[in-house]
Length: 108
Image (tube, rainbow, N blue to C red; front, side, top):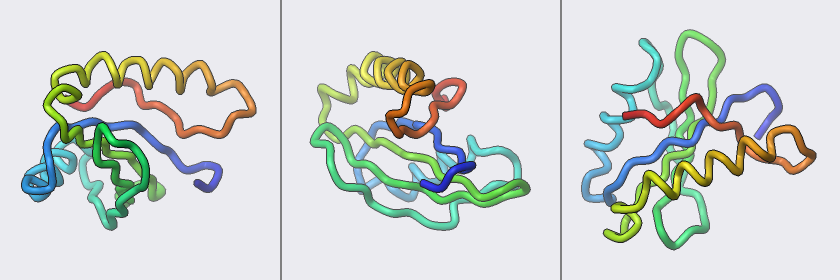
């Protein structure tokens, strides 16, 4: 991702049968006026489906990563899993390891 762009981890349990509802759920939690303009399926991960959401609005365009847990066990334990992932991203923030940035908290 280009420097200066914002990347935030967002989680939502579910599968592709509810993608329209999931998209609405995410857009309702974006800053006022921001909308998803493009979605790209990301590779990797067997606990969840990953998508990059390109968002544009009042400020500069930015990207979000949406993790949709698809297996019931991981949906049930998503809070702990995502908290641990966010903690690791914060630990790596001041290192030379390239990562996205973690938002101030989960979108609920």
